Image (cartoon, rainbow, N blue to C red; front, side, top):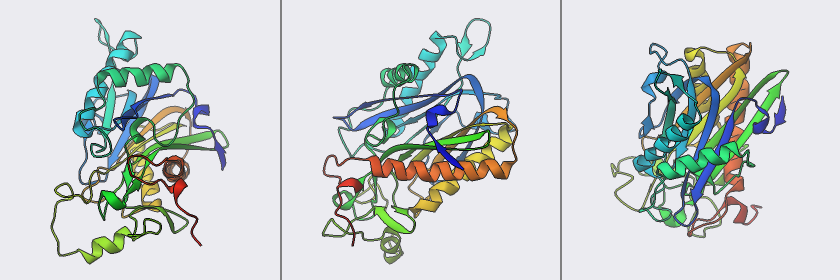
Length: 327
């Protein structure tokens, strides 16, 4: 299995736009020819657009773009800009009078990281598409949907850390799969069993262990959003691959992406996360489901670690890169 640049997977364009002062942004993954697409939602608090059409029993053959956005439910407005950009370029399904792009979206909650009055809107979605067609280098960390992302909310904002957006891709033979991940989770992010970002102890240098904290409060029924703790969550991901699958097969690949989340985030898929993973398939390479699944899970895992390691401290949220080295 060879690690490759995600931009080497043909048929896709990735673009981002953000407002760094307001700490929010969006990321779009475009397939001009249309991709067979599936989705898997594991978090208990999702915010999505047009995902019902991806059910294998429904009549949606292809998706032209997937949008990952900050701004909580307000951020779904950015999909309108993606729609307009693609329609202007004749990308979408032909209905005679125009082309209607099929655009799916999912959002994460970042309203408490920056200025909550400013959210991704149609103009930001349009700008992200423009950047995708400029073939700009993919920017990791505090960009796109990861601009206002944070991790480790179990002890409140004072002890949470900065999340971000990342990407990774792998090739085996002619089979390729990559993932883009915006990391904004309740829990801690670990690499090889060691926490690298998450809820901090009072010294803001070492980790408190989010799973232990949740267990210790097992009798409390407080809502994450009502207090300072658990102030905004969700991991969003999009897998892209040249594998050939129908919609049911693409949905299974999305589920494998969720496995990648569970490998490195603890706890994963909490009731207050909206963890959502899409999978877009161009259908160029015949492969078994299990072979593609291995690459997809590995790509999601690596993309999450890339996001956290690329993040930079912002607004009082410490980034992993700025933590002192653990002994």
